[in-house]
Structure formats: C-alpha cells, structure tokens
Image (cartoon, rainbow, N blue to C red; front, top):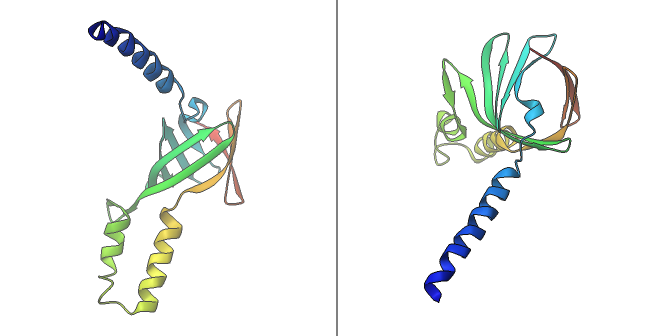
Length: 143
C-alpha cells in the first residue's frame, strides 16, 4: 500500500511545482529596451536589468516587479572596462583594519546605499514606461 502512494504524491508535487513556476515575480511588459531623451537606456530581461548611459555600461542588477511595484537591486557597477560587485569595490578602498574608522564607515554607508534594493513604482502604457524610484520619476520610451 505504501508503495502505491508515491505516484499520487509525485503528481501533487508536480502540480504544485508547475503552479509555483507560473507565479512569476517579473512583469513581462517590462522586458525590452527602454530609453530616456537624455541618453539613459535600461534593458529589462526577466528579472535582470542593465543600465547604459550614452551607450556605455553603467550598472546591472536584478529586479522584481508586479502589480505596479518594483524593487531594483544593483549587483555590479561598470568601471574601467570591468564589472565590479560590492566586495570588489570595498576592497579597492582597503581593508577595514587599515582604514580610519570614520572613513571605513563612510565607505560602507555609501556602498550600502548603492547596493541595497531600491523600491518604487512603474506603469507601462503603450510604448512608454514611467518608473519612479526613491521619489525620482523617469519616463522612458520602448526601443
């Protein structure tokens, strides 16, 4: 009897897994390339984003977006032809043991502000994305 229960349990697990996979946290309406009039371009791709300024890579990271709410987290900054994560940037300033406590605290605060999730809202209407993050609103056009 116990041996016959596993197919039913497997079927339940598969149905649950398929249902969970269908509950996406990224709005597919965001996917694609969006640009401002002043040269900023943002590429959204199923939970990942990259920002270019005047064609040059600037930052990239991850996002979740659903029902008009968005959370964007920068994971890398582009500098001198390479992508740097938080730890790499922190290492550029030296170890905490070698730094003055005040300076080390300031560096860590700056990095925290840069790499913590940024919360906001968005709306997509036709070919226009209105994105508000930390009170700053940008209007972008689909490319």
